[in-house]
Length: 381
Image 1 (tube, rainbow, N blue to C red):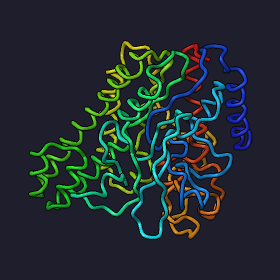
Image 2: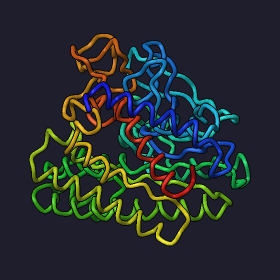
Image 3: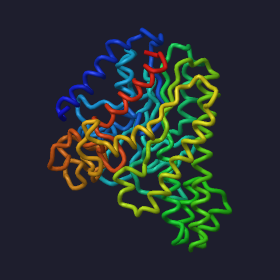
Image 4: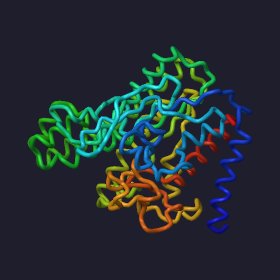
């Protein structure tokens, strides 16, 4: 099958799922989403980011949808909207907006969000002492807080929601940042360790620097990722399933070691990134065993896409579609402000990565198709 036919087949599969899925299996009337940038439908679509046409973590356009939007369309629960919007940037020349909550919206996912820690990449929480960062100022509401916010709004789940949960990537990035800084020692390294969430003893070891600091950092990161995976499973059980939700799908962490971000690292370091991912996923899956949650293995599916891209209509798995030098993107290639006006000089419609870690619209379509296939196999649609 040639490339155009493969892409047409993928589009047809998504349309068919939408037409045939409906509420024929599960009976749902809303989609509620918790997570990070991979599920965020426009939390930061304000100020300068909105002005350049950005707002989602992909190559933005009027028709660019992420996987939660595509799945919601397939089960006919309406167009998802961000439960909170705003941007608290302190970057000179970049305009943000005050935080606003939207009672009618149920997509709580936010770029930079971790499972339970407020210190995510570019989080506004890092702008205050002792971190004193100049950064994008993302609210980065942790998943634990997202769930509490929803329960405070509605009291409990009715059982007629499709609930999606996907997180863990920002925990990985903060732990990896701590490892990367450990050997140098000093206050900056200790700050990275604190932001990662490591114990005081590890922060002290990292302050000293050297090989021993790196060893301590790796052990702390592995422990932290395992804890985050277990925490997310516990949150699903106690804050979602135990509160009345019937249709809950939990997507595991894709293999970050296969992203353009990781491809800049040596083989040993990529192996460490992969171990951080699998540590998180193993604890997440173990914690969900025996529950009614549908566990979706995007880690394995993503690895197959990277290994056999032509099978999925992908022509490039290594190069980000978003240009890091285009003046049309004020954030130097970050997908949150990327549009077709700021992509590299090539046909990027069949690239899988928008920036160093986030999917293109095709990447999201492939994820949605896989999620829908798992829902179909479970008899949900």
